[in-house]
Length: 152
Image (tube, rainbow, N blue to C red; front, top):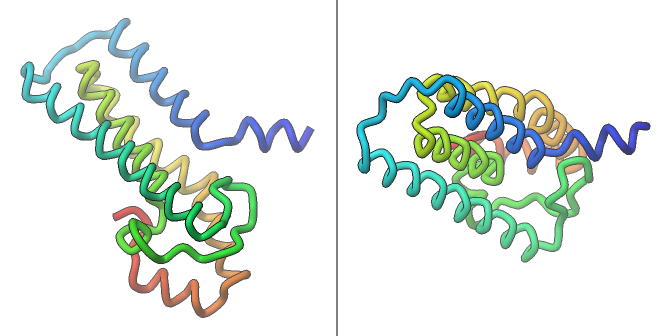
């Protein structure tokens, strides 16, 4: 049963859940509020930036031959590339994608889902991952957290 819950407790599924909530809100309670094409451009930039940030993070983790899976212990402490700017660029990319779709769907109330998503990800994944890395990498991880912010 624990294996099933670990599989279901996976960041992309949380992103899909929050995207689904935003989409349902945009369809069943359309309030509008974003004025036209300018926000479509902003939405596209958020989604594109989120995907690029995620891709850069995955490429860096692959380059360092360490895991991208949140429930596994990493072999390396990624501090290069996009990881110089954020300790959690994949999650940051997820938040950007969520923001972009909320803007694109003109789902104004769902903007509240973005900080809620960030809180859920921090609570369910980031804190555990950081505790694991602190235990494994010790002072090296402490130095990294002192110079690199969790999100941006």
